[in-house]
Image (cartoon, rainbow, N blue to C red):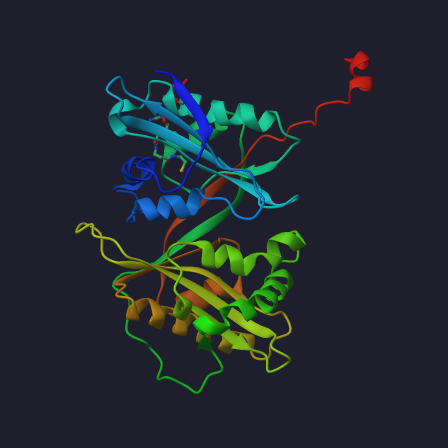
Length: 327
Ligand SMILES: CC(C)(COP(=O)(O)OP(=O)(O)OC[C@H]1O[C@@H](n2cnc3c(N)ncnc32)[C@H](O)[C@@H]1OP(=O)(O)O)[C@@H](O)C(=O)NCCC(=O)NCCS
């Protein structure tokens, strides 16, 4: 079977095929969730000036997609690129396809100057994927934990007067600056360009709804003390309950009473998910102890699995022509 590598184009029938392959990859695992064509497009589409995602596909003789992997380039210099997959349909596994898909994208990485790339999160028990990454020389990166509330519990605290409120559609553009600065303050190791593009990145996802972006103004010239983003996923798969993904919770390092603010943001985000029909809430956060993990547990989400992430082997930048005689 030959592997085709091409620039990914969102909004084509390939999105449906990729959703089928991706769903087969997670079915019956702790990270099982609905995967729609729109979700795939949201994950693979690139923003701003980043080059198009590279998509590697393997097809059976009848043209059916049986395996795929994708490489989303870093959004800015110094940012991290993301690998999607590889994912191979169960009946086509153990024939070398997963390794070849990974190698096809790895080869493109080798052409570039040492870009940082991490894999998608892999549940601890999914041994085939772990062995695949180890065999290809990828190394373990910090782990995450998947938390879930199923069913989504009713609000467990009476509503309190709170400064947390949903973003208004007409002033959403005004949030871009404050949200970028909040993201920069809470993720100081991220490149400034990534922080500055937070609003564009969050709102470019097809699941974005303005009332699902919760903000806590600091009362100080339009700046924000906190923000939370929840993505409800509309889908028609009867096997999967409607869900909402709590995608991010940001609390400024200098915000007053940060625990109460974090709890308020999460409660408001879960309420927004409920309003959009979600019966399940999911969140993915670093596994190392952190206040968001504690707050999610207080809100009724329970850890369901630890997930490993792998980092692509570091490449040495290609030597300048004048250095080559030393080889
Ligand atoms: C992980 C996955 C892509 C592997 O695809 P595949 O086509 O079966 O993989 P390959 O046949 O190319 O195997 C490559 C290597 O992976 C490892 N591997 C793959 N399947 C394995 C299994 N069931 N048990 C142990 N090792 C396995 C082996 O090291 C293998 O090399 P080897 O055959 O020389 O021993 C496939 O199992 C899958 O789609 N899993 C679900 C999705 C997933 O978890 N993707 C990972 C990123 S999210």
